[in-house]
Structure formats: structure tokens, C-alpha cells
Image (spheres, one colour):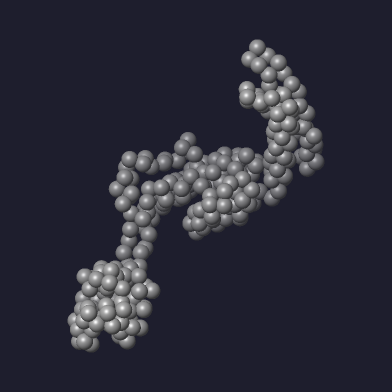
Length: 260
């Protein structure tokens, strides 16, 4: 149990919280302490309750740090991301956790095989450069240039399509103008007209920039993972901080904001 010592100074009341552990593997005692200053608006009873909660939380954090530090330190980015995601489930909202899963899927695809202890500024900078240069591939469905002609050859005028086959007006109008349509709508349209998909539509693949905030998160989440690993004594240094690598400025990426 952590010890709690109340201290009175000219600056007010504070509490010194100290933990002591005997680390068997390294055969040494580990002593950690922190100072907690209670908010001014708490009553005496509230302070007594809160300082106990703070002490318990601090002691638990130290225990976890020691536990992780004694484990095999041969983690890869991907294997340690699972530990970090488990931590997020206990400390953050479900929305944040869901977003993190998607981002770490991206991170692990590129550097997940690398061991944490082998990371260095050059590797992380190279990853950051990949983030900046990556393009997302978008596959769109567009009507063929012969779309309207093919329909006319089948006697399928706008009036027939709209009022006899009950095709939605807005999307039909877009298709007749050569604009993109959704897969579900195209499949349904082909079924109603009994015309093969490949005679009316084609797939078009285009490259697009990722949004600035998407790129930012793909860097920040790696930095946060390594910050957690450093707190847990798994690594000695977090090379994803601005002390070691270059983060792009938002102003230089404003042109990305118009992309999804």
C-alpha cells in the first residue's frame, strides 16, 4: 500500500505519495513518489477520499510499469499495438478506440514487422514520408459514353425508365449526364432494364490525396503508442517526437482539405 504524508507549506497543503516495491528479477527495491495538491473547492472529507484514490491509481500504474518492463522486450510495432489498444479500451471512449484500430491497421501494414527496440529516427521519418506521399485509390462506377444510346436502342426513354420501371429520378438524371453512381443503384438499374452491367457501366480508378487530419492521426497515434511504451519501460526513447523527426505544418497542406 502506498504511503501518504500530508505536508503544510506556505504555499498550502499537499500530499506526498510514495510506493515501494521489491523487484525480484533485478534484485533491487524500486521507490517512486509523487506530490498531489488537492483542488481548493474540496471539503476535508472529499480530500481524504480523493487522495486515497490518487494513491491507489499511482500504485497501480507503477505496478503495471514494472510488470511490462520485466516482460520479454522483443515486441514488434504490431504486437505492442495490441497491448496499447487494450489500454485504450480501459482509458478512452469506444469511438476513440474504434478510430485507433483503423489507424493502427494502416501503421502495422507499413512498419508493424519492425521491433520497437530497432526503431530509430530514420525509420520513423521514412514512415512519416510514406504517410505524406500515400494516395488513396478510389474506384468509381461511371456510365459508358454509349449509356444513353444503348438505352434508346432498347426503347428505354426517360419517361419509360422513370414512370414504368420506377427508376429514381435524381440518380437517373446523373447517370444520363455521365456522372458517378453507386454500385447498388447500378446493379438494380441493370436488373430492371435487363441490360448487362458491362454494356452500361465501367469502373474507373482514380488517386486522391488523404485529408490533412488523416495524415496527422497516422503520425500522432504512433507517437502516442511509443510514449506509452516508454512509460512502461519497454523502450528508452520515443523517436516519434518532434525532437527527432519532422512533422509537416498544417498550412502547407490546406489544399488537401477538399479531399475525403
